[in-house]
Length: 142
Image (tube, rainbow, N blue to C red):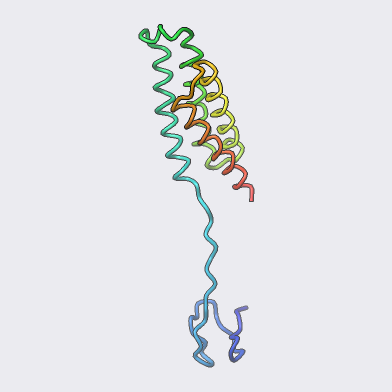
């Protein structure tokens, strides 16, 4: 069953833009736009995968021996960043994975921060992307 014209009361079909009874223009209700964070998720996941892979490679490299415990400084945060990036990519369809990826990002940032006792680009991006992943995982529930 269609709508009725507010001017003359004649029935209006779904595809009509003008009332055939009185000629009044029918205002169409805009369809609600569903928010999609797919571009954000893919972009940030790729950024984190690249940075995390760089950390992991640095942790496995002989040239980083001067950093003391390079496993805690580079390797563990790199592995956690890669896990978070993969979970974030998979989280596009599963909100729980997006939430877990945010928590994994936080863990990697915390370990990296404690190990170097300073802030790094990895830690900054992990915290920012982690916050957004957690927010978007909650938003997708609605």
